Image (spheres, rainbow, N blue to C red):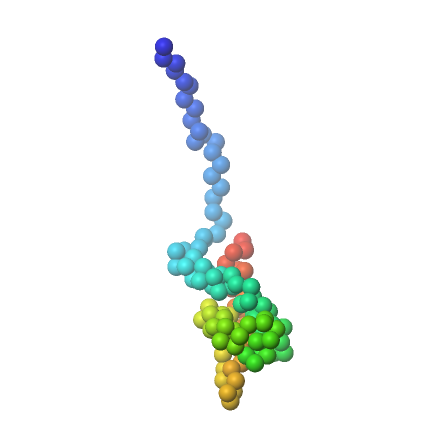
Length: 116
């Protein structure tokens, strides 16, 4: 015995909220993912926080090693990633490297995710 089922139109009255702003493009999503990967490490977040909390948002690499408890080469590696991602600027003074927070770098990340 065959039972016939009633067909219901599930598209009628469907919730289709229109976009109120442009979503991320594929290129923007790639750039944001790279940026967020740079932040997705506890040591890098600590380093960024220490630099941001330092006078003039600038710190010498020599002052960043002890607070995070990592070796100098490891700290330098993390600083290189943060610099490549656009969060820090590097300058050389004598034998030491200084890292400065790029103005607005953290704001760019939040603005891409927050609705206007």
